[in-house]
Image (cartoon, rainbow, N blue to C red):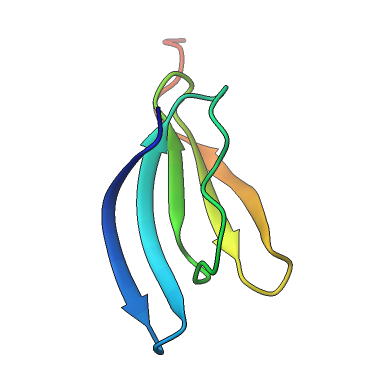
Length: 67
C-alpha cells in the first residue's frame, strides 16, 4: 500500500509529494511536481519525479550490504 507522507500544492497546479510503498506497488500518478519522491521500503530505492518526462527516475539506494 502506498502511503503519502506529505503533499503540497505548488504553483497552483502540481502537487509535491513524499510517498513510500513497496517495490510491487504502483507509484503515484497525476499532476506531480518535479522533485516529488517515492521510496520503496522493501528495497531502499529512492525515485524522483520529473514533470517534463512524466516519469519516476531511480535516484539511488539507501543502506546496502556490509562489506
